Length: 477
Image (tube, rainbow, N blue to C red):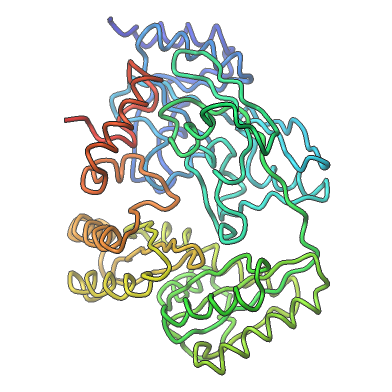
């Protein structure tokens, strides 16, 4: 089959979505560059459907005529998974116009939204009904629910609430040939065969385009207690987490690790901000407890935890937020680390997960491996210690350009860190996905059987390989 010429594609898709919702030429530029500006592509057109029906007709036309389609949410991917390649043959489908909150059911504790609703809008809709949608990510103002689902997003509250696989009850998705999978069920128990919605969660838009979802809501906490704590080492942090679970139980909502280079970087980036702690410490954790009890009771639990940590030699210093303003300031330090790296340039993103019992050893070994390659590397290590997910992101030396550092170290560092994570029984991608950046590395860490099964699923749903092609799955041998 011969792919239609660009003008033909634009005319055909404009007839479906309207002139203002089908972009071409220079108007596509904002949709063809990734968040970190590492992946620059081209698109024959960008389509912004306003409904599932419009998207279904777009997909059916592209499928019939052999036109590749790249789905895109808020375009906050760090792995190059949401932008087209540079061939200029693909159509980008942006879900940003499908941004309606459909229903908040406070009795059933569910939230039904279209895929283009931003995470912050979803959280606000839940809070307006006195409920909590617990996913928390630094990019919540721009990332969208469809993208959160397609990458199985995690964030800072996974320790208590789980990731997006745990937070979704039903989805609606348009398949590569335009058919619609209608699975918007608000049920916590539905044992009628395969759980098809989970095919689309974490598949990074390679099997279908999620257009709507039913999400779980939780009780809105009445109080929280937040502390910024210096710890003796990553091993001490793991031990302190164990103490936190014994002391506070389900109230432990977040337990975030921050290395000294990560703190220094973000404080320089933020300008006037100061460290919550006096003195210089190599390792810190941000702890958050939340509960339905009063604030005084929760603060007492936090103090009890920190006192036990001090007595055991795990805690070196601590600052407990005295107000909501303090808590927000603590969290801002943690959440701005990613942007600080992006603005600085030259950060090697290793988003790994390791069993908690092995995470301290992994950090020690991986740090030694990176410093052996470039001793001046700034070891920006931070993230979700509570669930074993560490953003191990070596950063270029201050006097080395991003281009020079990436050219000299990217491949060696990335492979060394990933190999150590795998050897520790871990994963090379905890929550950022595979996209393009990690695609070919899967051959090193997935068995031939796993890769074959994934390709069989892909071919069953997308036999022409038109939906987000060359993403996630390495080329079959």
